Length: 328
Image: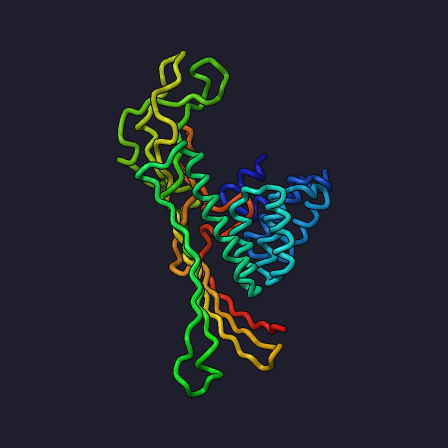
């Protein structure tokens, strides 16, 4: 669909118009409703996104991507309890949905449920390693995967003014990897076996001579070129190609989410928590994987995120939020 293409190219305004037009003819079309929700979410119109994701789930209640996307939008509007409900439903439907566990960890953290947050982040690390092992069959010395959750209760800073010098907590979630392996494939059935998995022959260094497309107002709207497709050629007719499986790597990923909590106890059962939370602390751009077809020009059109739900901890610009919470 042209609307899906526009969405993959991050042209959410045009994609939204196309989805809306399609829904005029088929109001209960799940793909159109879900796609429109994604467009609203990427435009930071989270209340509208929540509305469309709920409509999509009314049509397909067992859609794990829609549960994940709804959970994401709920976290962006501070509805942490509701987000936990949707994200738990998402992992129940799709137990290997790493991005849902990542958001679950963030949501539990904001609800003060530290043990459950740590368990969710451990699941993220476990699934990251499993994905790398599945992608290449076995980890090599080139594979680097790192994930850590740090929680530190700061000791009281002096004896004066305990209301200001005690009750501080520092938190950080750190994750990084060296990139996802991929294979450059033929764009046709060269082997004449109809298996749609033909590879190519490598004839040069794919990372030499890489040139970028022109930008528009400083933006790579036409994609970022990751490798040079002229380093490959189609194999001889009736053969599969000599390039090994998953021998190339896409862009690496790294992100640090950092937060500072201050707890004010006002009664034995009641307290107030003030939080400052910084997502993607170092504002790193995390590119997605490239088009692996020999005719795809080696281009990347988006950032790393999961399932088609927007953002999900990957490629988002740095943002800061402040939270005031009453605990009882």
